[in-house]
Length: 126
Image 1 (cartoon, rainbow, N blue to C red):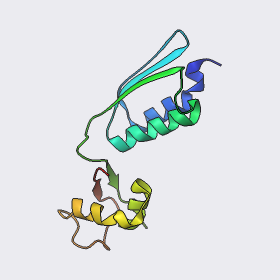
Image 2 (image 1 turned 90 degrees about the vertical axis):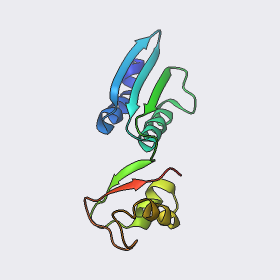
Image 3 (image 1 turned 90 degrees about the horizontal axis):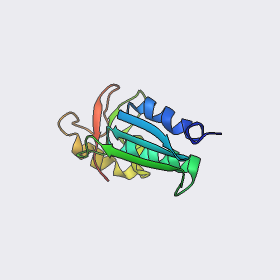
Image 4 (image 1 turned 180 degrees about the horizontal axis):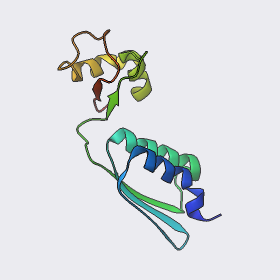
C-alpha cells in the first residue's frame, strides 16, 4: 500500500472541509501535505484523522496545515434541534460552556434558549 493510499481518509476529509491551497506530494516514502484550513477546529479535525491513521507521531507523513481565520475557533451553522449547550458539548466537550458561545453571538442572539436553524454562530477560541 502506498503512503498516499494509507492517508486517503485524511485527503478525503481535507476535500470535505474545503481545505484551500492544498498540495500533496510523496517523497521517499513520506507523504507531504500542505493546506489552509478555515478555522482551528477544522485543522484539529485533520490532525485527529492523521493520528487515527498514522498514530501519535507518524514518520511517514509531514503536514503543514495553517489556519485562515484564527480569530474564532469555528463558525457553526445551526441545525434543527440543536441548542447552545449541545453545540458547546460538541466543540468543547462541556455543555456548560454554552455561555461563551452566547456571549460571542449577542449581536444575533438575545436569549441563550432561542436559536434558529441556518444561523451562523461564532464558536470562540477555547
